Image (tube, rainbow, N blue to C red):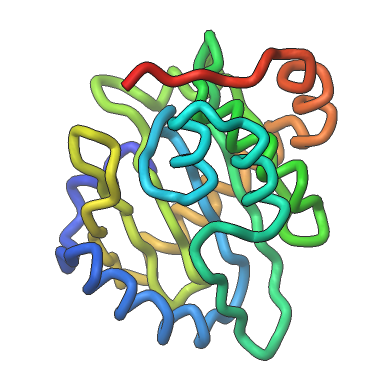
Length: 197
């Protein structure tokens, strides 16, 4: 199902419409908050912008200070799970993101890492989508333009599709390596990432 998400009927939302739609649904979340990340580079967050400007120390400080987008939380706690697909060689963005996720720690969300080769059998002609799943409330295929800037999302409401995707995400999550050992083995020893603009 994950590899066919782009074929599923959906409400197309601009970036602003996505945020307006996301937060009310987020507060209705009734299960696991899933995030599947497949793209290897993005643009937009202040800490990432600092890294792009060549200021790695300021980038890490912004991560530590929570210098990204504001995060709202519903009154109740819920499981948050992220699956990060990684290609080799590891891109500057993924290296930066791994630092961010490691600083946040397991108390914020459970993160597992999968090598791109682990999903090759389901990526026939197309990469897996960038997904955000809010329990059974809504699922978003998050979209980006050619420069890597967030452009909006496609909201999918079909419960059967959402539940099928949750099952597949859970299987990928179980196959993945926990972030901390991956980070310590593969990322910590690398020099500060650089970006050519």
